[in-house]
Length: 613
Image (tube, rainbow, N blue to C red; front, side):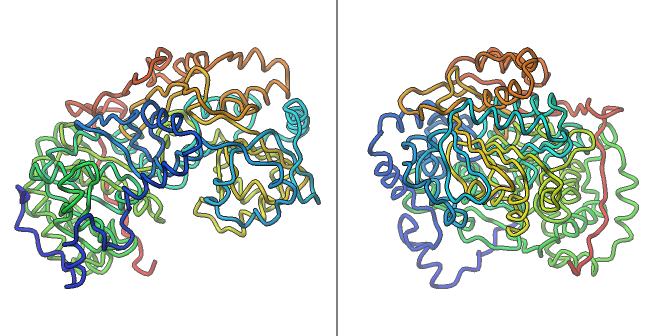
């Protein structure tokens, strides 16, 4: 179906060879296209030893493939089932056996192994220790491990201790426990993997609208006049969104892509859960704007300038619900088109074209990813996108809003405040301090620092200078195998699907889902992720048993609800399929921005970044 707004989409500019390959069924000739059906068969083979448990995870567990997080095979936004290749890739790590002792005798070469190779070795079997100048890992009891950790933390300066959470593999209960324990031990240095992109994606929204969170639900994509994919390729990171884009196209939505790279998979995609699309494919991208790297702010200002000159702002919304419009429009008039074109890498005509299409839209959804949130001026870029949405009142209404895309449970880490305390270090600052010999203890839960956008040699130098490293996780990652300053201890945790009493995670829709315990496979000595920080705290000081008296996951959720008012109702989540969605389907209904003094959102015009970057 042709888009219901804007001019007829241009030809995507494919070569004759590309057109031929696009005409083949199932997209078999497209390079780098996910091979879903092969992935299904591969997953069945990988889990052939425990097929019923793997099947139970897919049917009953909350998806951990990306930040969309649907429950089981149920799709919340549309009818039908959900199953993507990212989830299938994760499945084996939940269902496989523990690694054998023969692997652990000499682990020096494993420090340079790829993370996918290490995950295939098997689950972490038991507490393990490695001292300086040793080549291998040695099994120890939980009592010995906790005793060593407790004694070291007692002697360490809390300001030279750090905690880090890999949000993708940790439950809300586990992340909350790390936060409470680190704060209780006087440590201000706390951070999560959301730091590497996602936290900027929501912080910018919080500055303009009041709440650091996505504004909408996934169902708002369906039927929106305009959908903008900004610095993201969801075909690689969030495959389920491609299903929604297919349905949106059938309903007349127009899809614009703004990115330095023209991803062929966004021109046309084969959605496996929709028969016609899986065979013949779906034309997705209607418009492409090839902004240069770091040119997003200049592009937005060109669009804003056009809207301002053509009376394209929603003045009724702005007058009633926004501040800063004069400070926005006055400098826009002074901006030179030559500077904007040079800064964005896009011509004046193309910026004016986007503004014209946007002006015709009665609803619009903006999705953005690491192309925005990991650039140098990420906060400014996010605030600019938010301002672009606000000047036309595209917030707080059906089929309107902003969705920053991240990893599984990134939003949970943000909601729970897994961030540095007063005077504390971010994870980047902790790594720098460790490399300088200023961090004595570092505890990480499912956090592989080599996946962070930090120079690998700096991370290695940091890891090898820390006196005590504690790695908590379900599977091995390369950071565990680098020699310690003095001692490294590895503790086995349960997967989300093994935790007695179940656990919760939070999706990009602010939906806090309960994932039940699924019997069928476990590592005997693994413990729930929320329990391990509490055991460490009790070993440091027995009085901490009263401060963190959790006996089960339900008690952790009860404490969590008391500490995080937005999570009201989470303590009552005990059944499969249950959830709460804090803030409702969309934030700022009726354009009420009550988290900002005065109740109005704040429009901003950012400084243009230098073109030389």
